[in-house]
Image (cartoon, rainbow, N blue to C red; front, side):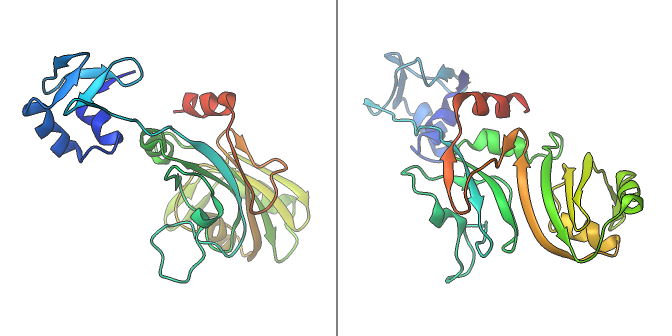
Length: 231
């Protein structure tokens, strides 16, 4: 895939994109044996790219999911002493969670070092569907189900419910694509319910399946391709 040269160099960890532009301007970058020019594009998988006559090494793109347990925070810069989800992932590459789950929420969490894909998945225009299994404090009936199907206003903005099912009187399966903080809990609070348990069971085409609590796995090729096709 063709990309601007400075973007390729920055992705390889050579320097910031601005510094990489300076390297190109100074003639220190070569593509297929020729001195590169600013604005030039290259294919990192096919072209020979040298900086100071040294081959650049692109970090392998990694895609995985974790079954996040309760008690772990998603952000990597939380105060010292907080258990972080990154502690559960044992890979040599530096991967980051895409989106977040509250400390007291369990479920599927997607990790990658593919910044471009992560950005697309988080952008509101793509509207990635997320399905949650919600445990509430009192029975949730057919009437409430119908009300929620119409969409609920939270802080003056309507939350569109893509799908909702009632596996049990105190359990609701709900699919939304909103990403506002605490949005599922706030959605049920507006309806007069307290969320006692919350688990995200799918993120876009990715399913939690039978992945055990606290365990993670790599995505297979088909899953990665399907995820990319959604963006």
